[in-house]
Image (cartoon, rainbow, N blue to C red; front, side):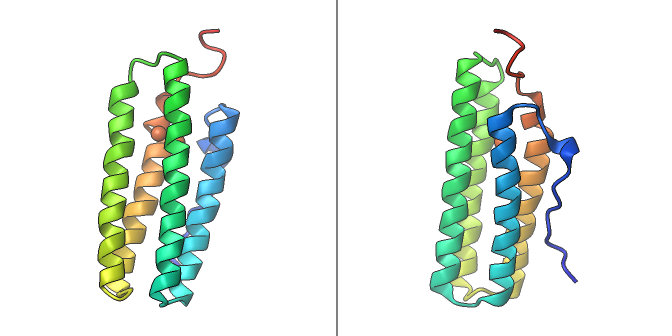
Length: 136
Ligand SMILES: [Fe+2]
Ligand SMILES: [Fe+2]
């Protein structure tokens, strides 16, 4: 019984190597986080894992935003806003989870938000990014 397992599919590939590499890596890390959350009620360790995921996402968004600026992508502001809003939301649900003492309900809220947002964003908003060879 595992409602939280992101399965990578090659149809999610954007065709932008450095971003695809990180998308795959993030899927793997979210699955690792799930295993940790299931096995571990230790607040400090969970806090560390959540901080690690936050940092990876933050770094991924920075790379992607840099790519968009390089391509002079018209959708930059809107796309960046989605990244920023999600990081705020993630911080909020992470804090809630930690202050709940790793309550199972809060854990499910966090995981469904995190996995749902990542899957949706990677397969829709990121899908609109200009490809590497489109304008150079
Ligand atoms: Fe992305
Ligand atoms: Fe993105």
